[in-house]
Length: 206
View 1 (cartoon, rainbow, N blue to C red):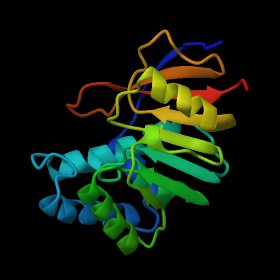
View 2 (view 1 turned 135 degrees about the vertical axis):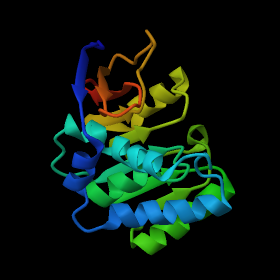
View 3 (view 1 turned 90 degrees about the vertical axis):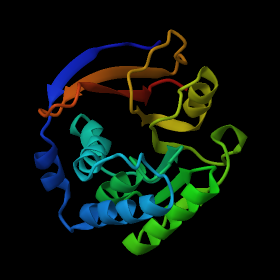
View 4 (view 1 turned 60 degrees about the vertical axis):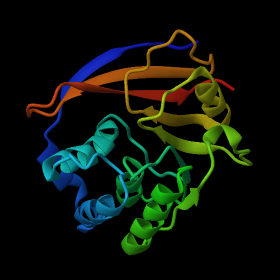
């Protein structure tokens, strides 16, 4: 049975980036994303450099509330320009990663960015609903994809027991699969940006 709690906290963008920017690759990713965005609309071209930095940091905010010793199989659904997937791969270093991006131009940009960063995720050009998975995942993320009941039900099947699914938004539904519990977190970054939220689902049932 799903349980719902609410929690609010504050985080400083610069502190978060400093915490995770040990080898400079997060900044490298920002530079590559900016260059690729000039060719392919990965994020809005009206997005400023400071906004991109904030989006990168927001990709890592949920991990302020998670303690993951290691991640073997990571899946990101609707990867777009690589937020949150690329920052997560850089900082957490999963053993295997799959990025799902059905649009050819965005998938190609992801491959170029990954090559330059020397990371090797599998980039799959299909919709999530079309894919048949032969194993489960211990971390799944979704950002800027509508979390329909069908998508959430499929995630609940391919998520490993006691594993984590991060939805970058506030989950608003009374149709959560019974094997999942979840917590909604709200946070502020201390700048002029409005408060935002993310939801952490944990698979507690089978």
